[in-house]
Length: 281
Image (cartoon, rainbow, N blue to C red; front, side):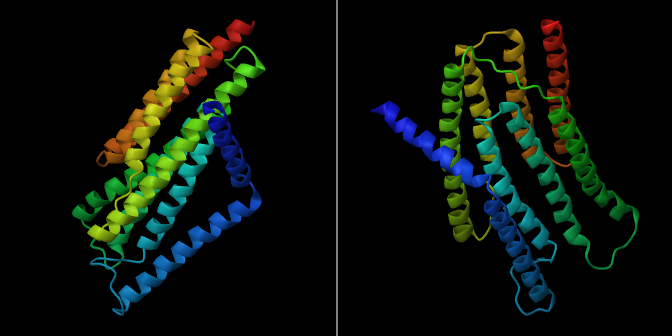
């Protein structure tokens, strides 16, 4: 009975995954992001003309922040669908999300300087966190690209049946992560309505990812106890912790933590590949 219940959930995931990767879904996502961007621009124009004020200090740059926030929602969903296919690719997706977060923060800060700018020392000092976020995003972009290129997907299970069971477990995890993510989104909307302030729960979701990575690591012990594989999975879980800290860290420290996490997984990947090559020869 329980096995059949899990099989239904796995089939539901397969159906959602198949539709998620289809062309029409990509167009729908693009249309939604553009719609939010245009809505934000419209509100910015109304605020500039003193026709309608959304909040104090509202600017048209909020449209970019809003579009990035909506895009991040879909990127997180894409991350969830990647987990059953490849844990390494899912980690790479996490770094993609962090790079977009850094870009969003840079755009968000630029919104404060739309009027006349006094190019004094104080203004230049205020620009430093923005420059840090922007170049940090570029560094993460580079590290992520190198990480994807260096990946070697090696099956840790001993047979096709074991591989399917392992993938099935990861699909179940993804289903529950999706439900949790939707639940957090509903909570954010209700909280925004009550408190008139929107607080994104992406930090809490990254905390869930930490436990997800650790669970996959522990569950993989059923199929392999090789030190190389265990260390690789452990480094991925540790990188998620660093990325979680990045989301709440102040300026400069957020970039530093993200780059350290990126260099760590990139270094582990290169060492892992070298060890695999030696084993094969």
